[in-house]
Image (cartoon, rainbow, N blue to C red; front, side):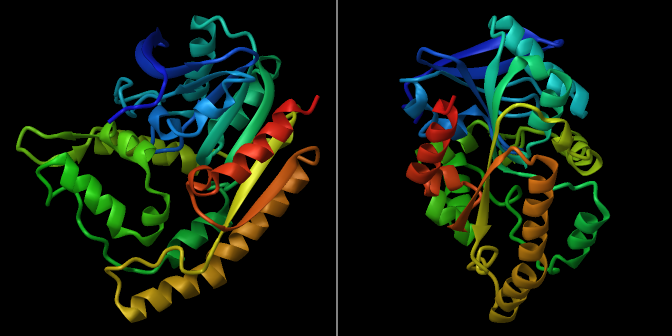
Length: 307
């Protein structure tokens, strides 16, 4: 049930209709952008906290949530243009942009193209260059473990959400009403009565290709930057359905592959954006703005109010 105190609306920009949420507030525009696979509702519990200082909004990108699902337009230039035209439609000259996950690809590209439109940037887990040979080598080392097939075994949304909540251990610690609401807007009942994601395989492939083919333009960023990196525990990828040997595989993968890669990315970001404030959160989670909300809120407010 959607209980967040926002206005829900749509804008027609760049040839499509985009969904957004507006929590109101006065001050500079603070625009949240969700990660891949999520929509504006993922911020339902977090964004309202900023309305005493900022006009707070969240945009749902194309191919997600209640926005349109065209089969094209998932290249980085079009995604950035969607944001620019959205800001134009709402008469927002400049904004503070906040992006969760998705490697911050839209933030870095938008800031490179339109520096005059950006007041500040907040990256909530960025800086994973999927176009680098090192990253592609990591993908080849991911343990060969079969995950439960979600789409073929559920015929109602409530059971599907329950399954998502319990299947992977990290989900249990971060699940909340905002994640419920976010997922409700990402799925639908197909004509044959099965729960499926709204995005087609073609859309998902196009988004993946954009992420894996784009080298973040962090060195071009001139605006003030806050970058928050979650540092996960070594059991982060361990799931209840895994056997003991499989769980051991995932722990080893994290310690020998994933964690060194994360450290590499942090240092790379530090070199590329020397003026950035970088915060590392130990014992963290992909949805750390939910699991460690107070800490993230305080870090963001200190950064946003610092003149």
